[in-house]
Length: 116
Image (cartoon, rainbow, N blue to C red; front, side, top):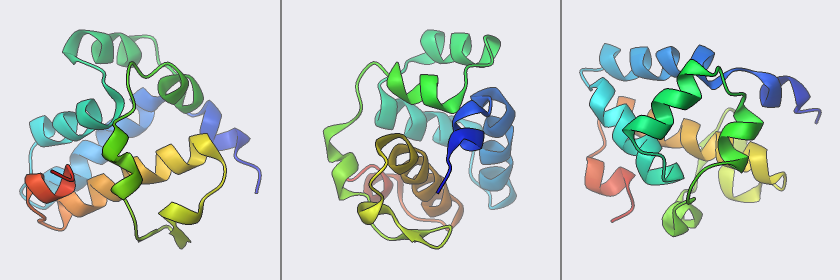
């Protein structure tokens, strides 16, 4: 699979879709941000720079301050792929984030989403 197109997409271009998906189901932008911060280690200020600079997905994940060690507990199917079986490290991180946002939109409790 050629993932170049996904890697080059601006995170700022996709972020509003994450928020919209969550808000349509009664969740909040703050919950989306909490998930992103938990997974990647970004804080409000560093995340704002990512959005302002229109950082692409590959750079977003490669420069993440600290990818959460419990990310390995993110399992299941998203976009037709088993998250835990994806070999490409960046695509795996993209799909892990997709899975967490999907769980949020499906009403799962934050404690479970954040694998606490």
